[in-house]
Amino acid sequence: MVSDPRNSTPGERDRWIPDAEWQTIVANVSLVSVDLVIEHNGGVLLGKRENDPAKGEWFVPGGTVHKNEPRTEAVHRVATEELGEAVVIDECLGTYEHCYETAAVDGVDSKHYLATGYRCHFERDDPEIGGDDQHSAFQVFQPPFENLHPHVRAYLDDR
Image (cartoon, rainbow, N blue to C red; front, side, top):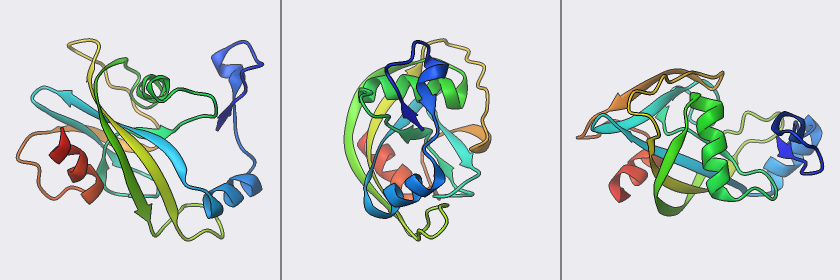
């Protein structure tokens, strides 16, 4: 999805990139994204992924950054879209390189993300975490963090 700033409302700004164009992008370009390391109730909120990459893994919420969208605004958009809740950014953890040998894009066998991790917390003490089609469940994981995807472990080790 990309954002067109000429339109007036958030819903009007969002539009899907046609499949053939998205295939070309994923096959040839690193994707800029944000990942949210949301601390909650003494642990970190993770979602069970329903799509590739990392399908079936417990992973931090995240998403691609739209053109002309500041990364911090992307963090807030992703929180609202994927969780239905607002977050407060506590710290930028830095940028991480995520390479996957799957892409969920026809004709493309890998995906490369340049993901900036942000340590966050929910704006409300008692959030009502919604859901989306990318996650089958959300759960707060408590330390010690074991048996998690290596990319998630890197965020947790650096927080």
